[in-house]
Amino acid sequence: MSVNEKQVEFLQNNIARMNQCSFQMKGWAITVISALVAVYVTTISDSNPGNKMYIWIAIAPAVLFWILDAFYLSKEYKFIAIYNDVTGITPEEKRIKIKDYEMPLNKIYGMEIFLLACVPLVCFHDASLWSNCRGARIVWYVGMKVFISYHRADTQYRRNAEKILSAHGIQYYAVPEDADFNGKRNETIRNFTCNKVKKCDVLLCLIGKETYSRPHVDREIHTALKGGVGTRLGIVGVLLPTRTDSLSQADFSTLPTKLIDNKNYVVWSDWSSMERNILVLLTEAEEHSCNSKLQSKHTNPCMLLKTKIYYDN
Image (cartoon, rainbow, N blue to C red; front, side, top):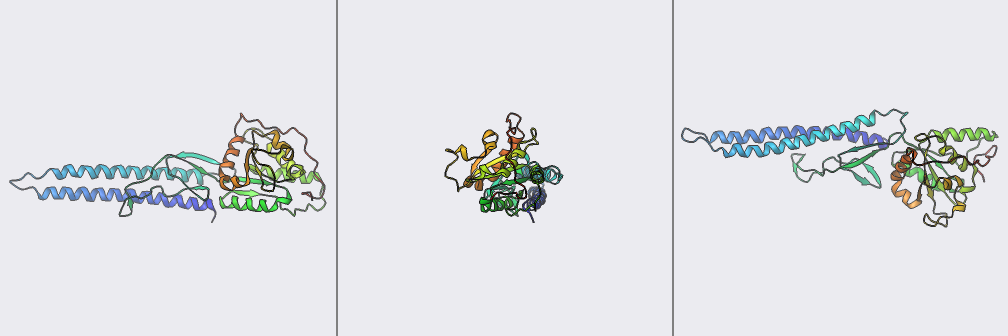
């Protein structure tokens, strides 16, 4: 079961839980109020009109239970809204879906996922009487796909990046390091690259020591930058530990030219930050893609791809 499928199942479980809690609130409200009214009735006699204090006492739990019932119902409706949004996305809708809900969120291993809507501090027959309720931004990654651009010498980092993306339920594609086009012309290889890149939403460029001089990386970046607002790909540039520079003191002469030409459009990171904040980086790159104020340049000529092979030695 994928991460997204588990999250959908989690939503279904929370909808059922909120419904159950709401039902229990109604049940306990009727029980407690009926008990207090019954006690009041037993105090009535010919000489005693009864102690009306029990009636007044009954109002407090009635208000409390009704407020909690409304709270659980509102949570249930919000979970239903998220569920309908998520399950209603078609395969053609590849973008990140960002919605604002009044829900608590937590982080596990750097990944934002849904946890219990109610954090029980006081439990009353499995119904939470208190909850940690705060506004939060829920980011749901459905159908998003990442193209991994890399130099064959950095294959191990590509594999590690694939593991990170898989752990977060993000689809990806990377041309295998042993890709063999069996003598096909460079035009065929170029079309292959363009088609693969354009089916993705964000290009994740792993930048090693020699990445800047690789024609296939140059072509992949060029393809990602083509298109208008919302159709071009977001780009995340990641400096690998194999380099001797850093983000604060980057050696521009050994960075892909097209990334430097679009340095304000590209979302930059080093490897360690990428491992921890991959979802944040992808979200920011996607937002850059849709931001009309951020221009992307792709007019510089591309390096010539070689015939027969995809990767340089």
